[in-house]
Image (cartoon, rainbow, N blue to C red; front, top):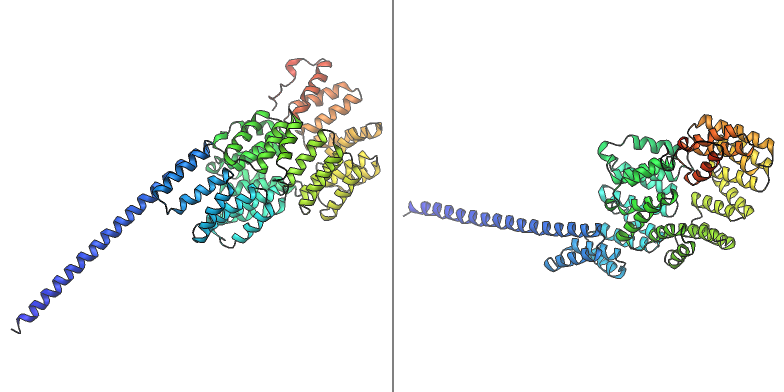
Length: 519
């Protein structure tokens, strides 16, 4: 009897272990099944989001939202779907619905930084820039590294640009590049900030060139890099190359931010078709925003100033905190002949961003164009007290002195200037602003000749030399410099006037470069 007990005891242990193994195996199978089911759900949700994004890219936000809502019926607890529906609602300007969904995500402690970025996007779209910047600074604490941190820095850089705060725009872009030097969006935002801030720091142009020259072939295919490359070409007065690069891009495939930059460049280059295409696509992707109103105003200004003004004024209450809005209004009312109203808009812009160097410079320039040189002079002198080495401000002060007949003061400004391009500006002022003084015209010609020696492909210098020689009836030299000007990119609006002059001087049509086909 005693001998059989250990045997039964051993059998019991063996059979018990077998039951335990069966239980563990079934648990493993169950977990695998749950994981498979969860993965299937996630794949279905991801597919819905991809299809919705495709609808958005084709300018169909209502269809995108409907597709996402159908997904919510199938997966009512999906926070990802809720988040993407909120983003579509922002685009459709249904801000209350979007805010409610994003605040619910914050309570769930999921998608926290993304939900906050969504709320910031609502503030930006409504023109509440200061509030948006404050929130961006707060969520920077939540994400110091990784993709979320980089996205936050991208938003900060773009937002500072809207406020014309190019110094902080550059700081945010540099920080983004330091977190991931290979990110083409970060690189493009840094190049953008360097070009925007070039009037403050001339070395910016060289650094921007260096960055673009060092991008890899793969990075060079990025639409962000290609668009800022076009901006860099325009900044270097290669407008035809810039326009050709922009026209080679597929507008339908470009990110929204780059569309606004294209709109700005198209406006600067007077390319109405490109501006219209960029504005239309931007409207489909973003809906109403300060940038959209500006693009519409740019699009209308050449054909109908009144309609352009109507577009801006209709949006003024919404976007009254955007300084560029007031600059655009000031320029338009000045075109209409309302100088006093132009000054009011300029001062409104100045008050919105007192620390923005470039904004204050643009205000001073606008005041000069509005016919209030003393007010402009006070403004630019205040700017130079803070930034004594700002070359553009020094040039503007010299031009103001020339306009007011203070030629000795104008000369004094240029004596102090060490900038390489100083002879180009000085020569222009001497030959255009002081044309009644023949001795100054001759001095201006010498300055422009220095400019051409330093910058052989400077189209504006050749045009100014042509104008000076034509005014002195030195036709041979005038023709030579006018033809040199027409062979170089830039100053397209002057083409017809110069072509007519060359025709009158007997230059045959075949020797005059065609419009739009200049080197």
